[in-house]
Image (cartoon, rainbow over the protein chains, first blue to last red):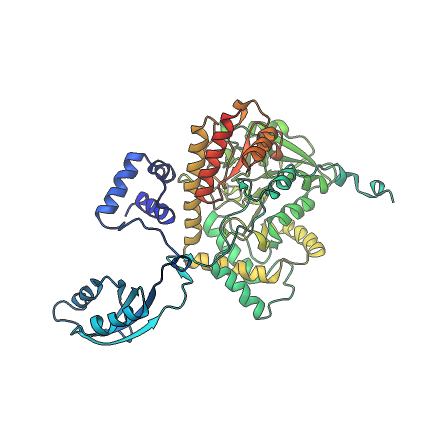
Length: 163
Length: 392
């Protein structure tokens, strides 16, 4: 990873709507080089997508989220990857992590209603043959995500002009 | 009561800061975008705040030794030696102060006798000249020029020296110009310092904020110059700790004893909890190889490029600053004075900048813009200034 690539990643993570011209200026390079670097980052799947961080709680959309600790039996030759793949393909699943500790996979699930989420766990997830146990915890409130504090309300406290 | 008679005429003669007026106007505007802020837009890193909270809970509420907590002085000593190559004995050569501001004041008071002259690059930070006057000295502005990177030039210094010259303030990286001193420039000054036997007050508060692959050059690290130098620094800029008010002065024991004498009588000590926070800042910095500072500097550097390019593109020639977090574009082509430009810009577009002449006469024809502000706001400000130029 080059310094230019790291600079571009940090800039895009802060605001992925920055025009190429400004990105190039701030990274200290030409538009052509910046475009080529971003292209390469996309091709190598370092950049996966350009998406905003949304506080859904402020919208009308109803949804229920849960974190599910899943115990599984790893499969020969495939380890946990095959199980993870079976799980992350469900559209209700937002994220899947392989964990150290008391359980194996942490699965973040989202559904429009509690009922649908419960059905997902009982009918789809628990019934997978390699899943040996689940523990579901519902998300009550989001405080911080991707480094962004949701309910910060912190304004710039600096003096508006100072020496 | 005729207070006029009561007030010290020296204090009365010092004009209020030229920044004040812009502060007053901008403060009334709810939607103002400010490029006039002289402090980082980062909040103090959380681990430092946490350390201070714990210090308060643990009852760290007393005075400290006058020179500062021994552990803090040891950390400062390590930091200066390893970051800038300037060794100071923590027991005898370092005094922790209430911000670098106090360090400026008490260093000047320790050195300057009535009538002594102090060379100050012009333009530079607003408080040097008043501090010299309050100490009974005579400030002597030394004009710096854009063509030579706003460095303190040896020829200009030589021309300004008289038999009364006591010391020279060397504030680099510079506020407001963003200029830095290169090694050759420092060596040229060193020759004069040695020949004329004057002291140097090297204010290196922006020392961590140097860009373009350059390294900060500390004046005390120039061969032979340690003995002539009082190095001032602090936590405000490098660790985003402006409100904590912790700085320090370092130099030869004989001078530091005198600086400490003033400090102990007028201040006693810097706040203990702030000192505990400062210890955490330096210790964590050392353990993490100053990763937080690097990230902060990288972030400033990107915004620096954005503003320099932005001003140059709109036809306001902008010198490339290699330090601090200010750009200092020339507004001469508009035919307006610095104050007129800033006032009209503020009134019509609600964008606050600071007129260059607030930092000395040589700043006329320039404005100071801080890029310690979000990228979004910087872009909005650039668009606003461009639109403002079209109306002229």
